[in-house]
Image (tube, rainbow, N blue to C red; front, side, top):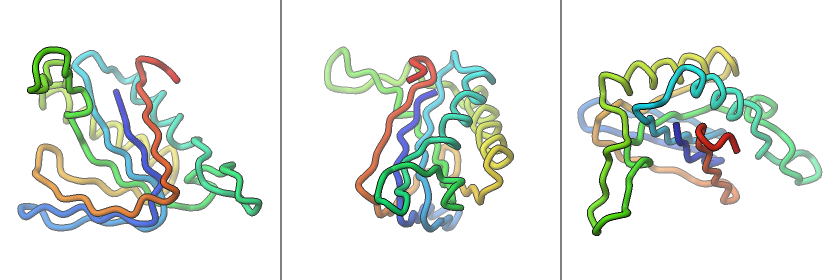
Length: 150
């Protein structure tokens, strides 16, 4: 699993088909799932995200987690995070999980994030065309891959 995490002041995700989902201060998590991802990848990544200290404390030092600031989390599925641009100019998405694998993993990820943090967790809509409006706070953007464990 690969994620791009952005510390945000707010996020609004809209879809002509499904409506609108929004959060205030917290994290935007763009989630890419590979065919080889497993429940252990979900558990490791949920733990890492929930404890990631990227919010400022009273001294202005990034020392607080999203749970410490009682923030919210928006999770949006994004298969393009597994794009390969090795050959030519048209990305290949061969490593991205097919929907029959990705949807249950996505739902498991969201549910474990809710249970682990106890915070409001909103989502986009798997496979839908969406528009995302965000205010990146900082800007702070972190990329994590469960295969690298860093």
